[in-house]
Image 1 (cartoon, one colour):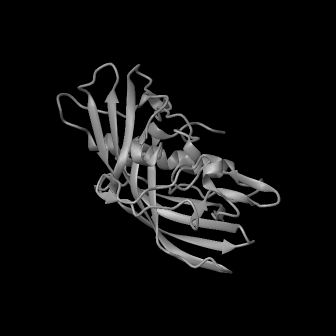
Image 2 (cartoon, helix red, strand yellow):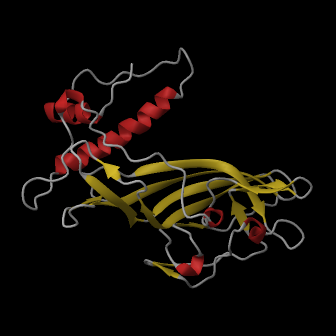
Image 3 (cartoon, one colour):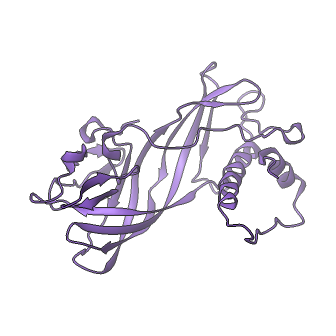
Length: 265
């Protein structure tokens, strides 16, 4: 979901502080300033309900970025920052059924970190031109939520997510810094009903009336954590040690874990 027509199809804005990239590796701070995402496809629950999910920022996400100069055109980078979203679930068949999960509320415990790495290029009139890859410049003074852009020019700016050389040509990675190279989407797994059918227990998005169930919110957070953990386990090499879960857990935690786990043997 584009944040503003003034910055193209960008759905994410990350502010990077100034950094010297003349040589070697240098670090700087980055801050996630704006976010506007929507589910595609929507989330289908096992009981037949379908929810459209939108995501915005609850708080700015602070982090760091390290940039290494590798050649005359650019180099490589690593980055890490925190995302604290507000997730809104809207029943597509019953629009009055809306559930909001604010991850800045401590009890929800659903903030997470994003770690990334890739290539970057320094644009110049004699070298890399971002417009050649469909990446628009970012004008200054654009109001995006509570943030005002400082701008990013066509030339003389760092463009993470792009790489290559003058002799070999330039390219754009799948995940670019801000503009996603003019594309309106991200590669992402489709949303899943994390109930998994274990023991017939499913996370409930709402109780009777307008009372929202904090346990359901907690279950969703646990589910997301477990899904990330399961993906990490699948990537471990053969013979790697896999840490077992603690032997004891409260009955409420055990129920939440059961409802959000999936059977993989």
